[in-house]
Image (tube, rainbow, N blue to C red; front, side):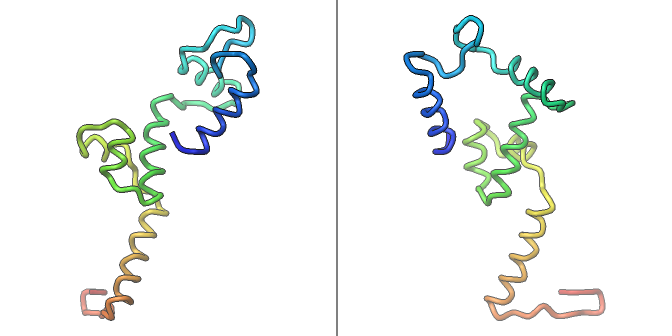
Length: 123
């Protein structure tokens, strides 16, 4: 849980007054224990089709990788024992691929190496 989520939950808790739980059924006041059902209802109400709760794990892995988080930390956050599993949850985005290519150019500039053209193309 990051600091933004923690602060938001604390604000919701304070706004709830004496309630023990942050998320409760508005009709019964009983705490909500099944997140997936609420997620499905929220997607339906928002007109979002074909999004499963599990898809959020893929989004998290991909966004963490885009932010530059190393694979070991991503595996820990997602609860994976194997980096092979983590690899299935992180998808290369155009932004990340562009950053990788730019990093190569930056490396060349910093190291004083020049990219030279050969007959086969750039080397």
